[in-house]
Amino acid sequence: MFREGLDRMSNPLVSVVVPAYNCETHLAETLRTVFAQDYAPFEIVIVDDGSTDRTPGILTGLERDHPDQVRVIRQQNAGSARARNAGCLAARGTYIAFVDCDDPWLPGKLSEQVSYLESHAETDFIFNDYLWWEPETDGLHHWPEPLPERPGEIDPERSGWLFNALWLKPMVHTSAVMMRKSLFERVGLFDEELRKGQDYDYWLRCAAETQIHCLRTRRSLYRIHPTSITFRPRPINYNYLILERALARTGIEQRGRPVSKREVSHRFARVAFDFAWLHCRDGDPWLAARWFLRVIGHQPTHWKAWAYVAVSVWRGVSRAVGR
Image 1 (cartoon, one colour):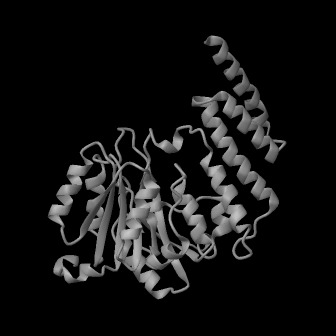
Image 2 (tube, rainbow, N blue to C red):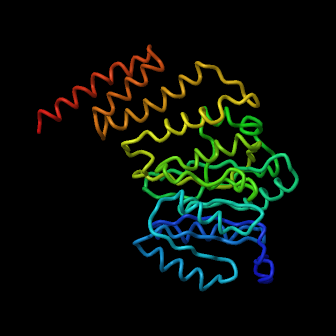
Image 3 (spheres, rainbow, N blue to C red):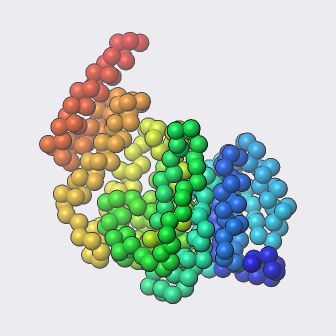
């Protein structure tokens, strides 16, 4: 195991990058699943993004208890993109694996991914299957039953030159990813101007550079929180912006799954509708109306968008009159 000697940590094979912000509730549980991996050597680079809860104290304890394996970088709060950049720049490994502080790993993740990348020089990026981990009726997240092992087997629908398929449908979970450090050096930094979706933007950029393969065995959990920022309205539609930028930068790839103009319009319309719906329900109704109109621009027959334009305007007027 990795505790057999400090000398192996001077040039670790895998660097596990963990952005941490006010994650006292789940950090210890998640890191236990990293320490429990059946692979060595690896280092854990944790970037404290200006936490104000008990996270800094937990990290100090980890540094003390695992001085040969844990490194903590501390920065003022700047978001997960800058935290991941700091961790990747500090990484000493041949491979970089990501884990978010509330998304645990399941056994065998590192060993399977390293083995696959070592034997497949044509790809610099691997991710494994994962579970959307929702709370049960008691409000708690219970550990799922283990699934049959399928070591080294890939899902052909989620493997290969994946830019087109990934543009149409996000399918990569951050805590499921391992990539070569050399790919990070080619692709560059996560976009720190994006306050949401920085990881999706980055995977699209990677997908234009290398084949991406998906291992079938479930090796990580994506914890769903009822209060997740994913489900809160923001003033900027970052997902739409990411799609626009990716098309402007790469275009529809000639490699991989063919994509029609109709599919492109449908994808833009769906992302616009989801953003508009959040604002119609809980945010700015006038912004919602503008984005429902954007939906109609992509799909003129989208009857729900037409209906919700009227609903949004009504809510906007009612709110103004109520003031």
